[in-house]
Image (cartoon, rainbow, N blue to C red; front, side, top):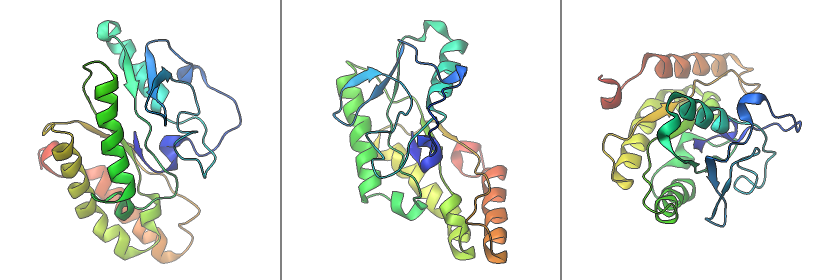
Length: 195
């Protein structure tokens, strides 16, 4: 799970909805690189400078398990950091390198597990300027390709959460940038969508 604060659940009122309830068959990789039962806030020891709350991780894992109860254990690897731009996730940067390192540790510590997908939720911070929104598509394609290369999984599914509008979109330029970014995300692109 990577991207911005929405993956981490950037608000915390201590209320956990039914779809986010813990399940003994859903684990999370802690900041100490050990497996533990997944409970919200999943990113509390990862995104330590922000408030973390309920994100899409547990509902996603519980939905996957409901589709195939024979699946076994689902491991979540929290890596998201709130308020980040796509540029901060580029290969060679701290966030990217930590994500790849944590994914590798998850496989090693999981006794033969495999990375099955990346849950990506990011983009709102790239709607502040038109230039950021216009470069988003190329940056995202490169990031997804790099994830697939560095995780040795050319067909790795990447599940992308649609961005919502934020308070950062107050100016006319920001609104236009937000609409451009949403359009790019909604229409889909790249080899993983069949171009």
